[in-house]
Amino acid sequence: MLRSSLLSPIIALVAITWFVAGNALAVRPPVSTAPYVVTTAAVHLRQRPRLAGRVLEILPRGAKLHFHAYHVSWAAVTAPDGKVGYVSRRYLGTVRVPGYAAPFIVVSVRAANVRVTPRLDAPILFVVHRGAILAGGRVTGSWLAVETSSGRTGWISRRLTHAR
Image (cartoon, rainbow, N blue to C red):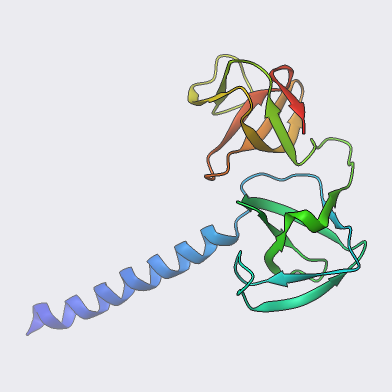
């Protein structure tokens, strides 16, 4: 009986930890990029990256959104009021901000190493190939924080890429 009574709280704790960690990762911005701006008359901020996703709010033209990640044709963003959701990328433009790269970067060379830190001697995380589209983020010297469409993040030399 003692073993059974100890097991229930442990299972509950593991389940709660898994739920909280999963939700925290879902909204954590992996790469901090320049803001987007709504370019159409209005756009729906949705709970999920699909047209069937519940509409959280309607954002007006010119609303500045903080970009978190992209999911196929959707951008995960934070609205001016702090709500986090998804917006179709076709209705967004970019805002130029010093110290940040354009939201999407294209690899210009045959193969480029994505590293752990913005240093040439840093360990290589993975390799991206010519034409790969990455979400661009913070700029540190000649290095750029990037994220792949699958969510992998790291640093790449800016001279190996160009803005999309």
